[in-house]
Structure formats: C-alpha cells, structure tokens
Amino acid sequence: MILLALPAAAQSPSPARARQWCFATSKLGDDQRLAGCSAVLQANPSNAVTLANRGEMFRRKGETERALADLNRAIDLDPKDAIAWYNRGIVYDDLGDRDHAISDYTSAIRLRPGDPSYYNNRGNSYAGKDDYAHALADYDQAIKLDPKFALAYYNRGSAYREHDEASRALADLDLSIKLDPTYGPAYGNRARIYRDRGDRARALADFDKSLQLSSNNDLDFYARASMYFDEHDYARALEDYDRSIKANASYAAVFNSRCMTRAIVGRLQEALADCEQSLKMAPNDPYTLDSRALTYLKLGNLDAAIADYDAALSAKPAYDSSLYGRGLAKRKKGDNEAAERDIAAAKAINAKIADEFAHYGIE
Image 1 (tube, one colour):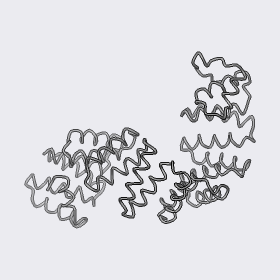
Image 2: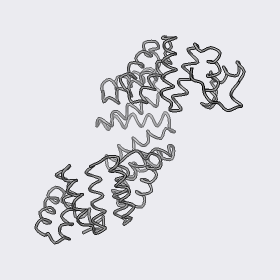
Image 3: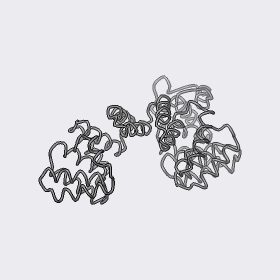
Image 4: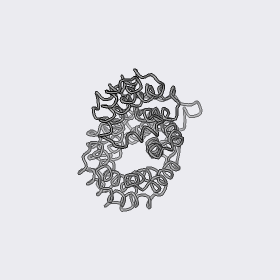
C-alpha cells in the first residue's frame, strides 16, 4: 500500500471526513481528496471505488505509475466499474499507449454504452493512431448521444481539419464555440483554417481569443508568431516565440524559429544560442542548420556559414534558402562561378528568394 506524506493538519481526518474528502462532489483540491482516499484505504485497503478515486487523483497530478497501480487494483476488485476502466484508459492515453487506452475505453463502453465521453475519448485515441475512420465514428456516436457535446464537435472538427476537410472542420468548430465559447483551443484550430484560407484578420482575431482564454497554449503562440513572421513583423513574432518557449520549452522548431528571427533583427549571439539548443534537441535538422548558417553569414563567418549550408543541403538537396545563402557566402569569398550556380539553382526553385533575403538584411 502506497501512503502519502501528508501535511500535519491533514494526516488523520476522521473516518467520516476522510470519506467526504475522497468522494466529494464539491470542488476540493486534489491533495485533499488524495488525503481522504488514503485515509479510507488505511482502514479498508480493498475498497475498489476508493482505489479508483485515488488513482484518478494521482493521474491528475501526473503520477502515472501510482495511478496505474491503484486503477489496476480497483479493476481487479471490481471489473464492472466502468469509470475505473475509463480513467485507466486516460492514463494510458497520457502515456501515449493508444492500444491499451482503446481497449480500456472499449471495456468502459461495454459496461456503459450510453456515456458520450467514453466514445469521445476513444475517438481521440484512434486519432492519435491516425485511424481517421474509427475516430470519426466515435465522435459521431458521442454527438449522437449528446448533441450539445462541445468537446466532441471540437475533436471531430480538428480531425476534419487534419485530413483537409476544411468546410466540415469549420462547421464543427463554429458549433463547438457556440456551445462553449470559453474553450480556447477551438478558437485556435478555427484560426488555422482561416489562416490556411488566407483570411489573416479572422485568423489573428481567433488566435487572440484563444490565447486570452488559454494563456499557456504554446502551440497557438507559435502559430501566431509564424503569422507575424510571414508579415515581417519580427518584434511581435519574437514576443510570441518567447511566450511559446516559456509555456513549453520542449519543441526544437520553436527554438529554430526564434533563432532565425533573432538573426534577422541582428541579435546574433542570442540567435546562435537558440540554434544550438534546437540542434541539441533535433540534431542535423536542415532548417536549423540553415538558420545557423544565416547567423554565421551575418556575423561574417563565411566558412562556418558554408559548412552549415552544405550540411543542410546534404539533408535537403533542393532547399532554396540554403542554396541562395551558400551562393551569397561564396560570392563574398570571391568564388563567383560557384556562387552564381547556387544562386541560379535557388531562383529556379523560388523566384522570390532574393526578396526574402532582402527582408533578412542580406543582399
């Protein structure tokens, strides 16, 4: 039996108080509910419902091993507890184990086929496996069971968007927002549809709303930053890259994007630091090598720039930015014949590449 180290005031609640905390329907903190469930289990270690409740509290706190231990025991004691199967499915989803999650959600559905949340979550697991048909079938069933289930519309709309069914996606996301106007990610995914359609004003308005509602949504900060970057609004782009990294510093691509933007505005040493961090996370990534090469080019370190452009082109031979940048570096070194070959090859791929480099401050 796993016992928690609890604050002195919460170590010994009365049996009645412990049950009240563990099974509370009011909004108690997770720590207090854990304390209550643990106290109940000290008196009755085989209380399946209490184990299931504590397992869910562990899951919410990110303690997946403890969550699985409690939920495994709860299911062994009472295999007809649909909620325990459902919550264990969520734990497996949190671990990225889609197959086990689907199996557990299916067990929950067999026991309680009228609960739309079970279908919605199983749909998410299928979507995580890119099993589009099964995901949509589950979202459809969730919506059939609860036509006002905003989250199911959001998930189905997101699945449609990822599979290039923009009109269906937009209809679902509109309805999701109508049913729950406080759910930020729905605005963010709708913003992506508007962005892809070229409606930048609506896209930015929806990203603004998403981030107003979900202030730690790193992916929406990153997406909005990329829009600002495309508009050459580098100051705003940098602000959003900073916010994205502050919210979640686990994506190499965001460090690369900030590296590129810092290089463009002349913050070259900071740019190098970002590119180094990105390459630690994603070694030999051609896009980051290209960004670091641009930084070296602006620093006047032509040999380092050419080496990085060579490495980027080894991974991505038709990379217009690296061909053009390498051409400029070679031109500065006086190797005009090789420079013109690279520049011509880059322009054949992208006729506007010279204009892009002009925005970077290099001609």
